[in-house]
Amino acid sequence: MTVMTHEPSTAPRVEITLKHGANGAAEARHFVRKYLADHAAHLSDEQRDDCVLIMCELETNASRYGGEPDDFIRLAISVSEGRTVRLEVRDTVRRHPRFRPESDERQRGRGLFIVDALASKWGIDDVQFGKIVWAEVSR
Image (tube, rainbow, N blue to C red; front, side, top):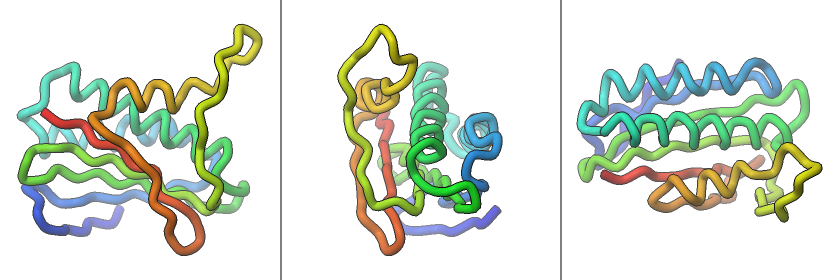
């Protein structure tokens, strides 16, 4: 685990790197729960659950569509001075995620709808060798 701080922040920015396709969703849930327990006591239980679900959805999208089996996915979380939680997932594919039409036959494709409904705001930043999909949960 790499710990990096940036300003303005009331808590350290923490990152973990996961192997693409490995048990990432469970690791993402554990990572966010632990961080929030240590650094975000101001959040309600509902906001904590929202953060966990958002990170899980972003990690799942990155695992399914964001690289090859030997690639890595980087998860990061931080809390700003304004007490906004920022969740980030970086993968190695530049193609942006997109909303997919609802379908009764398909059991996937709802992740961005969930992120859009729960996050205060979210977006995508192109970076060298990939992208970062981020979401923020405000108080």
